[in-house]
Image 1 (cartoon, rainbow, N blue to C red):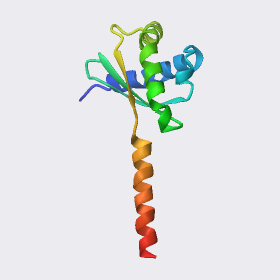
Image 2: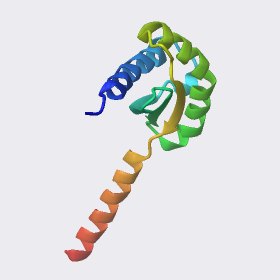
Image 3: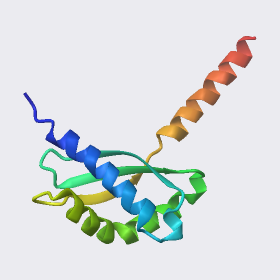
Length: 115
């Protein structure tokens, strides 16, 4: 039976990073960032943290702000999670919402052509 530890750690990591971003990171570039999920490697050494922004044009600035705050965020979560090894953090823009909106617009176009 596979271990559920990576799943549990990813949930804790998501909560900890969200709290640090909300309460401690003062960079205005990350103010509109919403964390959407975390995937963590089985050895718990790399965490991919997915985020979205209210407007897609804010994504490059938000990503730059997250990259500049990564070391600070890692230090903060190390003290909170008490893991033997704090995972390296990689922030990635989550395109799921944009893809869903695109598919929805395609379905609407098809529906309009049928009527």
